[in-house]
Image (cartoon, rainbow, N blue to C red):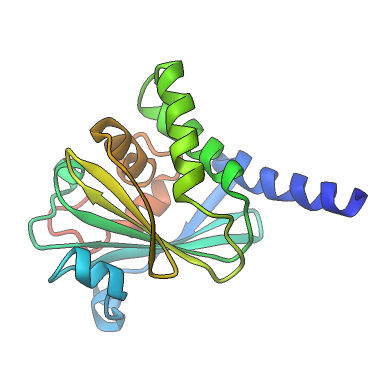
Length: 196
C-alpha cells in the first residue's frame, strides 16, 4: 500500500510542476528529412496532414511523453484554433485519467478563467474520453475547430467533447502563447510555414 502511494505521488508530481520541464527540439530541416508517415487515425481525420514538429516533455530527468503536431497546408500559427489539426502524445510513463483531466484543466486556465460548472462538466467528459495510460500508449487529440475535440488511444476512438471553448483551450495547452511549455511549443511549431 505504501509503495502504491509513493508511485501515485510520483505520477502527480510529474504532472504538477511543468515550469521545471524542458523540451527536446528538432530543427525544421531535420524534421522534414526524418518525418514518419501519419498514424492511421490522423490520416483518416486529416487527409494530407504533415508533421509540423515534435518535442519531448521532461520533468527534470524524467521523460514524460513525446509530442507530435500534424496539420494540413492551411495551418497558421496565429490561427491554430481555427484549423483542423492533430496532437499526438506517446507516453513514457503511466498516468491515471483523473490526474490527466485535472492537470489539463490547470493548464487550460492559463488562457483565462473557466466557470466552475464548466470545470466539473469538462473533467467528467475528459475522464470518459481518456482512459488511464501506460508506458508506450499513444493518444491523439484531433481539433475540429468550432465544433469538438476527438480523442484516440492507440488508434482507437475513445471519445469526443463537443464544445468549441473546450476545444480551443485544450489545444492551447500546447499551442497558445500562454503555454507553460514554450520550448515544447516551439518544437511542435518548428515546421510551420509562418513561424511561432
